[in-house]
Image (cartoon, rainbow, N blue to C red; front, side, top):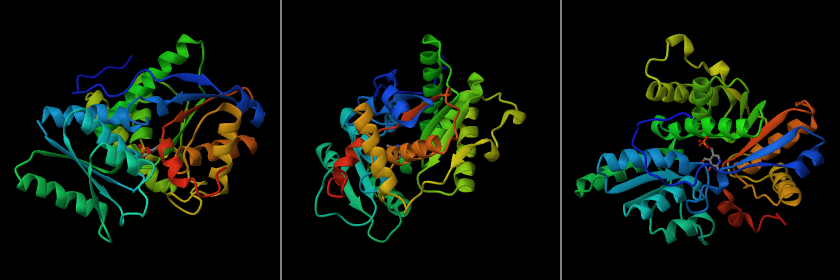
Length: 330
Ligand SMILES: Cc1ncc(COP(=O)(O)O)c(C=O)c1O
């Protein structure tokens, strides 16, 4: 089991369950599918951000922050999870959200309100600019702000996923299983980068395939490789330059970008339905539904061997489902 002395606060119920998906595997005619239930991390509606936030809040509290700021899309799972973690620690939370307020506050936006986050809408400014501005304003008001970039994908946040890789290897070993491949939704890159760094440290040589949510292959490969190297520098400072991760080492598929970020197409709809009908499992319209659509398509095209063991890393996001209720899901 990989460990670290970096500051960490407990936010997630770990280890998350590892479950077989026999009915989905049968519906696709193989491979042997399993799911890692990071949608069940236990913080608010669950999801991958809980693991990152354990280390990000660890750093925030170590710096004596009294206010946490971050940014995202209106239905950002990361923002809702950050607001929940801030509520749990009694910290003020400011969320910078893209665009202008919608008529209805549902899904993650409803959660943001329940956690009493202050919502700041960017209008036509960039989220990065507004986040920097608001962070400076908090400091000017005498508070001690801690700003988290979009998606929580800093090296410190991504450490959570290096440890998660170690966790899944332990769970697999307990069951006498070996995963040939892990499949995960990849966007700001921290989740995949942490997994890649963890694999490097553990000597795991199965494929870690990121289904890109919103970026072309080269951009995402660059981002993930850079972050993975930063995670290695934090966890194993003596890593030799020859062991550094190169962008070409990062497995990314950008064949499922559809009509763009947050736009639920036919493929995501079909994937959400198939996961629900066969396994009683919820995936979301933006991230896990898109990754699931990639998995289903690749399986149907015969990209996997029938006897392969494949792990679908469920990164959560299901609170956003409700915001898409009027888009012909059921
Ligand atoms: C549900 C869900 N899955 C996957 C991701 C992608 O993770 P990352 O940004 O670390 O690539 C996100 C990011 O917001 C997410 O909310």
